[in-house]
Length: 612
Image (cartoon, rainbow, N blue to C red; front, side, top):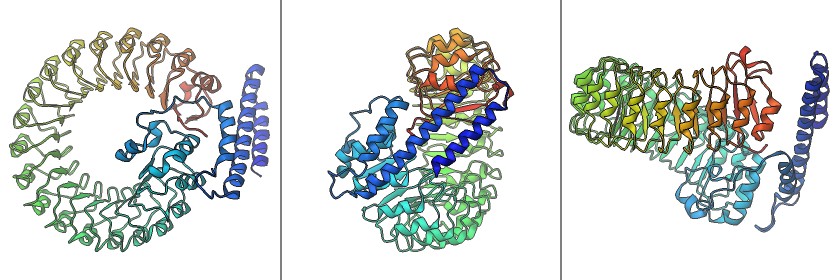
């Protein structure tokens, strides 16, 4: 039936092509692409049918009987014909002990980026694994059943896939799981959680499973859960939290559950919570926090709960908080910091709290802070940072605090900073960066600091930087990148640095870059990208570089790209067939119809590394 449907589509498409008056040579090219696509889908339909008969017709009786042999043999042949194989996985990390010690690392990131490789590995080592992380891979239901056959002892499972359905969780019944993460499995409904009943789970994560309703949490009743995450499940109401009563929860995350009100938190009373996250639950008021009194909390996030006032934090008096986030709670004033005095805070975020002034930071003296964020607190001046002197800060963000001058950074001297963000502090000059010399910085952001010149980057030499952002610093020239040579940079952003020419990119040779952004550097030509050959880029952005032509695609060959942006490059045409031939990757998803890029509002090609 599917083949008949595909053939009908092919016939209709052929008729559609013939209705246009185009060059016959181009028409033949397009026809060949369509034929290849039809053959491709036909082959994979055959694989699907064989996999069903091989797998379900001969259910494995022992580990030595491979339930997916038929599928592997056929899919391997098709992949050999159509898909360029990626490099071999990292052997040093591909062992059960390393994987079990690093449960947050996806097997895809270790090189097991398709079903065939996973089966090969799990057949050998699956019984030794207690952790299985399949993030990024779009695994399907039937494939998961095969994977779980080889991993009977896992207690941690993490999957993000658009193909996962409720019945998938039925495969987990015999596995001794204590922690599951199904974030972004957007097809799951309340019924999925029925399969978890009776399991010895202590942690569940269903963030961004936005079909779930209050009833989903009813299936968790009676479990001894200590951690739950239902962020971005925006159908949940107060009643959802009623199902959690009596659980020994220590961590809850209901961020972006926009229907929750103050009463929702009443169901948490008496729990031994140490961490709560209600980011963007904008209906909460001061009274919501009264339900948290007496809890052993160490971390709270009420960002974008913009009904809160200073008195809300009075409910935290006497607590030993180490991390607070009240960003975008714009009713807060300096008085709120009086409630935080004496706490062992290491992380504070009051970005976009517009009423905060220099005096607020005086309350922070003596705290063991390692990270502060006062972005968009536009009343702050240099004197604010004087209160931070002597602290063991590793991260500071004062972006958009546009009253700051070079002297502000002088108060940071001697700190073990690894990340600074002073984006849009447009009074800063080169001397500001002089105060950063000798720091172990790995990330700096001075975008839109338009007084900076090339010499500013001179002060960064010798640092172990991995990320720099000087977007919209329009005085920078090619020579600025000369100062970055020898750094272990993985990400750079020099968009809107319009003085840069092709020679700028010559300084990037040999860097381990994965992301570059030269958007709106309109002096760049095709020759600029020649300097990127051999660099393991995954993300490139050259939008609005309107001197680029189709020839630029030749220089991207062999790169492990996942995203490219050439929007509004007027000389670049949508030669998709030629592009695929150049890049040799199996899948392209693009947002515009096949027409000249100059006609598209935003032309974004995304190339995903996965087997079909």
